[in-house]
Amino acid sequence: MSTAESRITDLEIKISYAEDLVDKLNRTVFRQQQQIDLLAGEVRLLREQVRNTAPAEPRSLRDEIPPHY
Image (cartoon, rainbow, N blue to C red; front, top):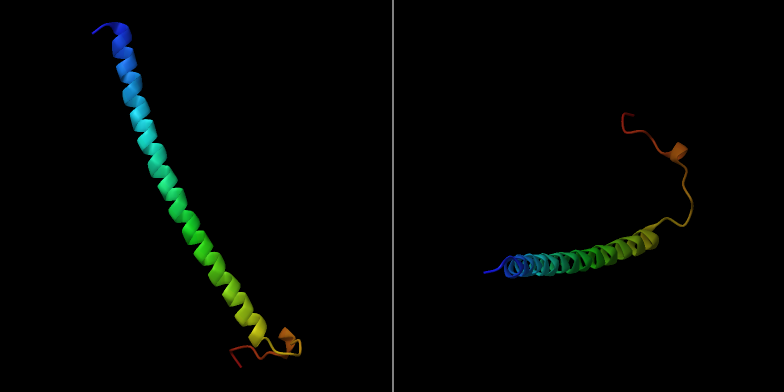
């Protein structure tokens, strides 16, 4: 095998590893995006629940009794 052929073979091997790594990274990013979407939906639901259960009158923290009393 000549030097040029050896270099081409080495480059092909490196490209193969790089393609495999890119595929793995794409799958990881896809799974992370799915998880982000799920968590964003849960945050949205929690915000709606807080809005729906919030008291009609604004309350002041000065009206609250500290836990040690």
